[in-house]
Length: 210
Image (tube, rainbow, N blue to C red; front, top):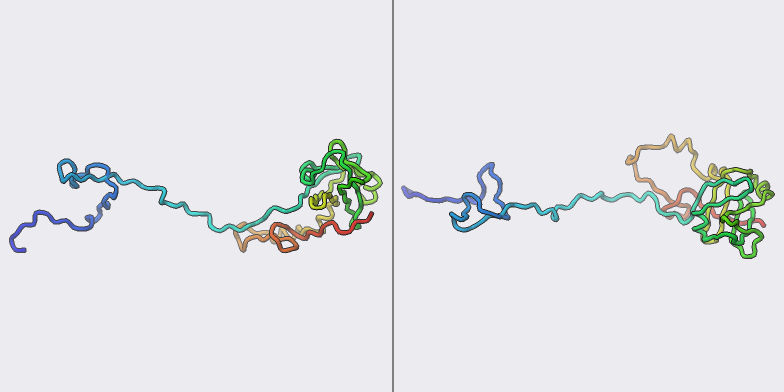
């Protein structure tokens, strides 16, 4: 270039160690024009949070799903009465409703909605089981039992708690094989039909003896 003087030389990038230029100028910036320069203004830089997506939790395993039946642990009172407001609500049972009370070969009691039944729910919507029937099944007063509502048949099955010992996994084995959450594969809960949401076998009521 000889002895000629170049009055201004602008490079495309910022100086080393300098901040990048603001893409959204809001006011005059020194050395960029402004009222004393060429009339250009630079806006203040703003962070658009709408473009910053929060990280999602990722794929989570389905551990359980609603089960079509309902269960409860309740106690016979001194007069052989038993009930559960939630289960009876699922069954749409009401006070003074006619029911039949029968016995299953396994020792369970089966209470079914029956307009021609020989029994009726009490005023407080409880099943009043005759003491002779309780003794036949081996139940005693003040005994806690397992109630299973069967809405599709408008029925209630009453099991002794020993039924749980036969159906559930061995509790000592469950304790010894327990692991911390997150270790190994995700927990899979399936019913005997292979559909998710159940645990163990769901054998139903089966034949009932009159």
